[in-house]
Image (cartoon, rainbow, N blue to C red):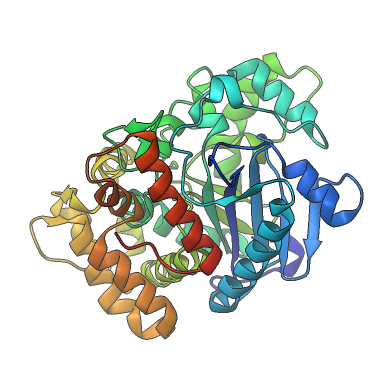
Amino acid sequence: MSAAAALHLFAAFGLEIEYMVVDRASLDVRPLVDRLFRDFAGRQVSDVDNGAIAWSNELAAHVLELKTNGPTADLQRAAADFHRNVELIDGLLARHGAMLLPGGAHPWMDPGREMVLWPHDAHEIYDLYNTIFDCRGHGWANLQSAHLNLPFHGDAEFARLHTAIRLLLPLMPALTASSPILDGRPTGWLDSRLDVYLHNQDRLPALTGRLIPEPVTSEAEYEERIFAPIMAAIAPYDPAGIMDRYFLNARGAIARFDRGAIEIRILDTQECPLADCSIARLLIECLRSLAAGEWSDPGAQGRVDTERLRRLFLAVIRQGGETMVEDRDYLRLFGFNEREMPACAVWAGLFDRCAGAIDAGSRAALAVILDQGCLASRILRALDGDSRRERLQAVYRRLARSLATNTQFVP
């Protein structure tokens, strides 16, 4: 999103979705994104403008990012645009015996052996990251996410939006977790991508903070409490000053004052664009209601302690919708009077309130998730306790088919 657009709260949105490039036969990762771009553009490029959807790469050469080419107010149309690009890309990759695979993490990738850093534009940034953190791990080499960008204009709108996002973040993985398998076996976490992501910057903890953002309400406060510690932490490792504070900020939601937007980064990629865009629609409507103070006072929302939110977040990335939310004061901020509720019931209640503002196609997709569970739960049910390579391949081929047809995965 561009700051020049000066969009106000909920006027339009940006969505980015990352996919893995894999071998069509074995489903092993294939570092072919640069070749894909060369095939499409006729020369080596690092970004592709394909009308409504743009293509890019970040860090790993097997990861392709598709994104709305600027803000859009119509995520239903965006889902169709994403799917058309998936079809085009799969056709181009077929020449190399490859295709796209959805999901938050590759189930058997060996990052120590298979990680290939992006070698083209911006490679000096990735090289420095690799020097500092060693990117041969799942948290760098093997994680695919969807990023939702929401606009704000000025400090007052920023404060309302940031406060609402911060409050809702711990519950989001109950809808979006899609990475239950790493190294060829279940990890015990429905959102393994976020479990490993939490430890990416252990060497420089200021970059991630507590993952749940600090309760800040202005650009000046954000600069003081978040950006200044980040830049101080990276300075000894970056004497040339090539790192950007926005690029370094690894919290679960990051403020982009240069674009006038907040980017939510904790959403695992789903099985198809319909699912990603439908989840985005529900998140937007929930955040709209929170920011407007329809369910609780925004001042009270902002006073929730970061560690309380982090504890809930850690439980949700492990257990998903089965997580019992036992914080009655937290539930009251969403308009619930119960003493405790499973996270899936919280989402069902929020969906019931927001459904009237959501298109029919997205409502139907969300009903599948609310009824069948997050994609990680559905993957585990499909595996039925069998994580042998042959079984994993069979289930993940079905996921690839879901992506190719823009249909949801149901065990």
